[in-house]
Length: 275
Image 1 (cartoon, rainbow, N blue to C red):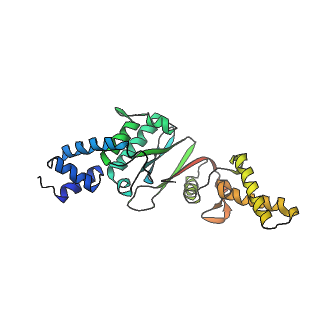
Image 2 (spheres, one colour):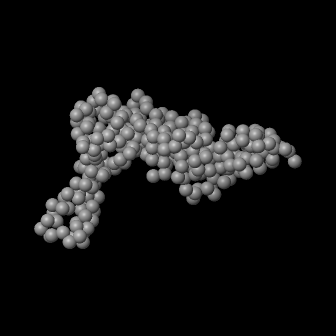
Image 3 (cartoon, rainbow, N blue to C red):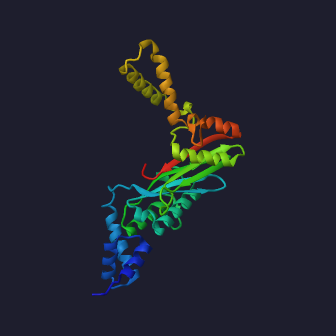
């Protein structure tokens, strides 16, 4: 039997991001031939893609690229942090991101069919999943267009790629404040830009809940309308960006900060891996 060293296994694992046992077995089967081992892992991985379809993907990366016409952000997910920090996975993320920026795709379905060189994004992801031996999926894509763009990427661990990404579109000239708003969004996780953007059905449901809570607390019936409106105001401060307390100074709202800076936030997107 071919003597496969730990160094051989380590070299191939770093190259492909595959598991220890699978890598060693492939090298043994290939009599120590690296390229043949790669082929074996890819063939076995392709057969395993279907079996991995129901696995959860709670790790991965968020990546952003800006072009002259738009800013594109993706979440590319995998199963383990070992793969998430592997150079092959990070390179895959960059390749997918650039292909989607070039294609102008705005939905995951359209993105998967976009061209990536001589193949499609779907085939590119499936090929890497087969080689690495984990489920990999393009979970989300956002494409934002605006006069100006601020981007913030946050690493939750120094040895992992960015896990949170925020893109903000705005008008005006204060790029520093716009980026600070992107940082705020990464922390505060607003769901809407302004309170007027919250769907009526969501507001109605929240109103019903806080009214029931207030009644159960024994609040006077005559005081209920005012109490409910106050609690709705607190709800808007949680979900609407411009109503939120500014992370750097909670005496100000985000709306007050951007007004003072002379900018207007026109849109935003926030991705967090696994969320």
